[in-house]
Structures are given as C-alpha cells and as structure tokens.
Length: 315
Ligand code: AMP
Ligand code: MG
Image (cartoon, rainbow, N blue to C red; front, side, top):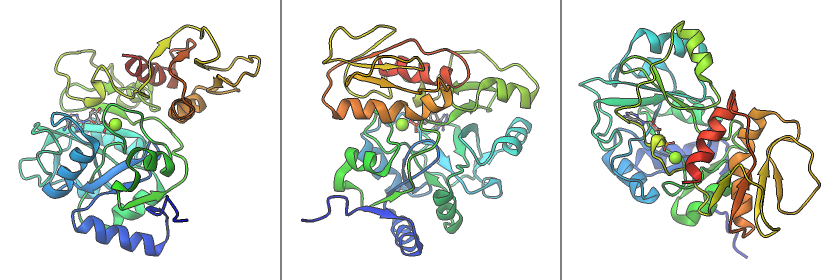
C-alpha cells in the first residue's frame, strides 16, 4: 500500500535541499514553528503568496506574518523603532509578532500585507525553521497551515489532515511546543496587543516600562476577526455537556474518567493547557463529536490567550 503520508518529510540535509529548491521556485511548503505549523512561501514572490491565499481560502484583506532569521535582514522592509529594539532583545527568537511601518523600498509582496502601510514580522525559534530561513535570501510569508478560520495545526499529521496531497512538502518538526499562535503587538503607533499569546501583555509592559494602549479602533489584524480558530462544530463556554455524545473540555480538576471528557492539563498548568488546546479540539472533531462544552478557564497568564481563542472559536 502506498504510504498516504508520502509528502511528510523528516528533517535532514536532503529535505533541506529539496525544500530550498522548491521555495526558490515559488512553491509553498508546510514548516514547523514553536507556535503552530505554517504554510510558507517566498514573501517577495507574487506567485508564492497567491498560492498561500488560494490554498488556505484566506480572505484577501487578511495580511500574513513575514518570518525572518534575524534582525539583520529587516532593514529594507520595515521602519525600526525603540519599542521594537527593546522587545526584540528580550524575546526573540520567539512566539511574538511585531507590527511595524513598512519601508517604502520594501520588496514584500503587497498582497501578503493586504496593501497595508504596515508589516507583521516574526523571528521564530524552532530549530528546523531557523535552519531553513538561514539558507534563503528572502523572508517567508507564513500563516498557519489550515483552511481559513479553522483550527491551527500543531503537528505534521494535522497539516496533512487539512491539505492531504495538495502540498508537496510537509516537514515533520514534532509537536509545536507552544501550541497556539504568537502574541501580536502593534508597534506602528503607541504599543498595543492585537492578539494575546504565551508572551503576556504584563511581560511586554515590563520590558517597555509603560502601559499599553487600549484603543480598540482600527483593527489591523486578521487574528482579530470575531470568528476564527474554529473546529467546525459548535462550542458552548462555561457549561457541562448534557449527554455522553457531547465532548467536555475542562482544566485541572480531577473528574471521573469518561470517554467524552478531555483534560487540558491534569496539573492545572495554563501553559500546558494552551499547548494542548488545538490538539484536543482536533481529536474531538475527528472522533465525530457534534458539540463541545468547555469549563471555565482562569483568565490569567496563558489563560487569557486560551479564552481569546475559545471565545472566537465559539462564534
Ligand atoms: P494568522 O492568521 O495566525 O496568520 O495571523 C496573522 C496575524 O498577523 C494577525 O493576527 C495580525 O495581527 C497580523 N498581521 C499580519 N500582517 C499584518 C500587517 N501587515 N499589518 C497588521 N497586522 C498584520
Ligand atoms: Mg491562522
């Protein structure tokens, strides 16, 4: 029997070579990051960026995060500022995305930035992705590797689940350790959080030594769309299921073992809960449950990011 996962590759020299060659031709590949798996293409190439939008069925007005190896390569693409430099020094490479003003001479494809005057940039930490980024002479436009508005993938098999053989290369880099998308911080004006993540707003406040803006106007981020991160079945928050055909996601407490009960973290650790969120939601969906109930999750630290995703998944 033919191996159905024939487009999933483990990472070695041969895979690296094959991936670089493919990306150089304007093709796309699914690559691991520490947050979630991405769908990557040359950020300077119209061909590559168009393919990403088409494959994901992503609305044209949703810009894509651009990924770099390090700060050395961004000067021509964005305008740096002191907030960025402080956060970069403390948090990069890592699960944080910065919105900066676009440099006029930037070569980033304008579809990738939805024609905005801003660019979202990130410096991912995952070893495989860093090795690839270091070998390219362009940054990678890379949204999560899922059909738009759905669940983000946290393993190579999750990506396969979404796209089957429609992607030539999916690199297996293990389970994404963070498991939810990066924190997005807008630094194009007074700093503000656009999307909560594992790096908390308190941590950012501490580094910048200032309060963050609460201004909710001017939504620049697709992660800000009301419906997003959805497993494709209804989610009810803060309630218990009515019967065993409905799945129950809870946190910490010791409940009697039941097939339809899923614990985000037995230890009651919110970071672990975040890392398990999409994995568990995908498992529930694949098991054929038609509805998910979720217990209350403490709204602090990583819990803020979890509740943000749950709220939008439930829309
Ligand atoms: P995702 O759907 O996970 O790829 O999320 C992309 C995130 O990137 C969004 O939540 C936005 O915050 C952000 N984003 C990407 N590009 C831009 C841009 N050019 N200007 C502002 N925000 C952007
Ligand atoms: Mg996404």
